[in-house]
Length: 423
Image 1 (spheres, helix red, strand yellow):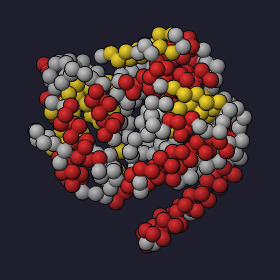
Image 2 (cartoon, rainbow, N blue to C red; image 1 turned 60 degrees about the vertical axis):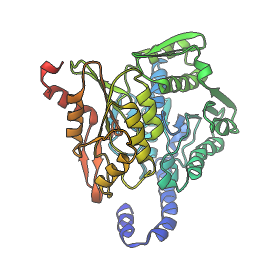
Image 3 (cartoon, one colour; image 1 turned 90 degrees about the vertical axis):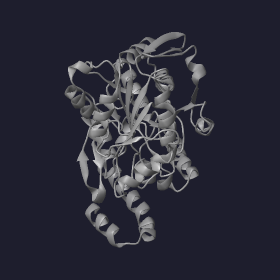
Image 4 (spheres, helix red, strand yellow; image 1 turned 30 degrees about the vertical axis):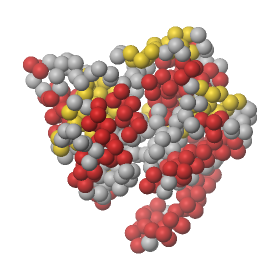
């Protein structure tokens, strides 16, 4: 069926294809849940949704549940984990289709996992990959503009997210829980879900909190928690995860140990050290809002930035704004190739260049060479920020071709090429 659908995509006009796709994806969802015998009915499922912070919040929730001695499964942009076995997410999508999510949950049930923590996306909703997942809880982080080309409008994007609230409401599970960020203007829309337990959170939940050079500190239920994770967004992610874990009976001491022992989350403000006297960071930031938050996570530091633009053919409007932000926060900026797909990568770069008014960015199309140049430009105590891909396993090129890739590995390799005299 999949091969057949790929073939007809080549010959059927897009308007007709738009009519065919929804029932096709729904049919796959039905077939998957029947084939794997409705696995989500037999395990506690917590979904995490929002524009930013989903992956980190999933990792934090999982760490807290594991610290409490629970056997967990996890599915997010970075990895898939069932019990003590895990594998890297190589799909370049958070919620893979073609029965994947149902099989993942069936395997988790068979491995006697008590909880499955799942990152849930608007793209997954659009293709019915959320269907027939019986949620016990949903954690909402935030909403900002993203995937506008895919959804048509920002309102459509928000509605796709809200369908996950409806999924929770319609779930057959008992004692369902919604956890929502009330500092976000859409938080109230999620918190008003018709479920038994409603848990709001905000920065007030974390007070007193502190953003430090070496991480963050916050307070949860009168207990001081220190974390090496950086930026104000990390405070939000920790509080979101802790608020949920608390509903599951995880003790404050266990929450504290889990947070303080989670040193890094791959591709999320991931610090890479090979003996250099400056800081090298890889981060997934690919929207203007998330990019600015990462830049702000290093106040008072000189930034050397490597900037691409995620996804040729999508979110075109954000390109000049991302360039503008780089000019505002970065002492030097190198624009480079990222995931052009079928769009001309030079055009993508030129769109970003429009955001620069006061200095000219350097353009190096080869991403490895761009990273190398940034590392060579870094001075003592500088921060080299490589954004956009995080843990993405490929650079996506025209006609479906893809290049195996890892920003983190490339940074390590290039750091080790630099003369020791630099350090």
